[in-house]
Image (cartoon, rainbow over all chains, first blue to last red; front, side, top):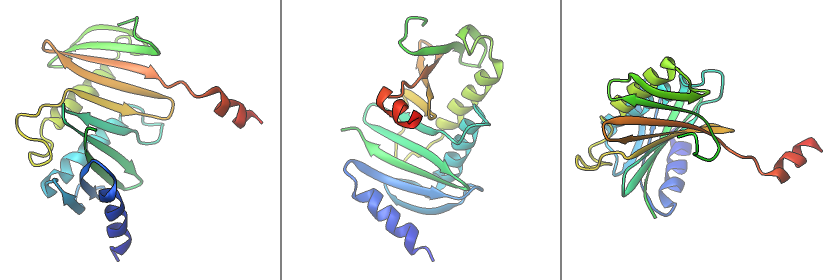
Length: 90
Length: 97
């Protein structure tokens, strides 16, 4: 059942500079996590995407990007699923 | 803050979310101020594995189709800028046709 999800995650992880990837459902439960990502952060990631959606409730969910000096975390919601990609800065 | 290119609104907040300065579409926008301070509080708890404890976020951006919000922390103040995204003219004409 989760073969499709595994395939998507494999593709994401094959992208250059990607260090980790996490997918969670609307309740903040982790569906998949690979690389340098902690499963426990699924709840926080969903909470961040929900919080960002409140900014413009009439528009489709935005992409949130959290940046440090070395890395960035991109969070995007699609329907009930939220995905986060951790990238190293090029 | 008014001089930032493509800026359509800005906020300067204290760490607890009080509005110090504001302008454009975000003028006195307490609602956005609260949402953004909550977002920063949440982002502090993100992943100790993906991001080390000594690796604080320096920029948060929230991107929509035609505008984006940029959030930075400096000197114990939160700076928020709402900027429009310029669509390419070729793209616009393609839609019109």
